[in-house]
Length: 97
Image (cartoon, rainbow, N blue to C red; front, side, top):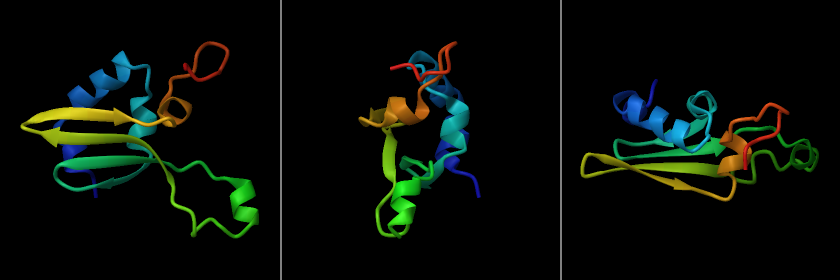
């Protein structure tokens, strides 16, 4: 099942990602939680240390971006984890800060 909010506002979300040096491809392949007016994007990168402790199912995933549909327009809220997870890599392979 595909997120209707992303499907219906794909061009706006791509433009936002481009303007903010974020990877749209990473966003759409991330774990998402959504309803008709909100999308939460989560960091799904495995954490070996957490998994060694048996915490994989006990600790919530990190939220990296929130997208809200308000009065027909999108509003984006970045978190302190947005750049680390969704940032576009520069020529050296490091994420753009």
